[in-house]
Image 1 (tube, one colour):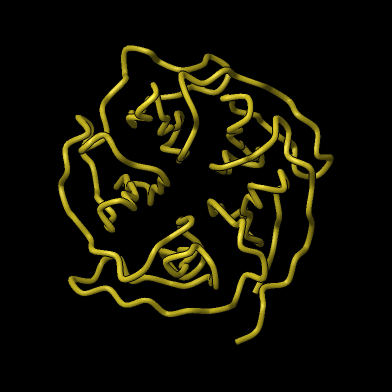
Image 2 (cartoon, rainbow, N blue to C red; image 1 turned 90 degrees about the horizontal axis):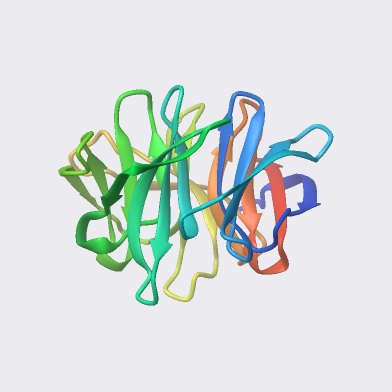
Length: 214
């Protein structure tokens, strides 16, 4: 299997980036070292905004005019999701516990919000109240997920979070199958965001953000 082709690699503002999402032409990245979100112009790699998060950011998805963010709070790192409005900040009144207090990557297809729960090896869909509507079993560990030109994509990995691959996953099917496309030749890849022509992921432990194509 061929490797993905790196197009760019940049130092991540804040250090140890995890979630990524594109809101129009702006790349939003969450930092584990600073517990904050950064808005980045990907063409100039300039930070245009920095916002403190309520905890450690694990997942981001753009859901129209607002965004949803999963954060870990407290010593037990219980997971909650919040509404976030660029230019205004986090809506503290929207704080909602993730099912079983676990969750990470988020994806949104224009209608449905998807949340990965790796400890339970599943993806769930949530309604506006944060209640589970559907459960989708995962055949592999995943290090990121998002929507792209052929539907739903994810980064699959083995039990050691190694041998990472970009793959499609027919999430609308009652029995979705994993279809690997290309290998990702670095084991730190976390998160997955599409800008219309290329994918982006966080090479978290070296504090870099990478764009690539297949």
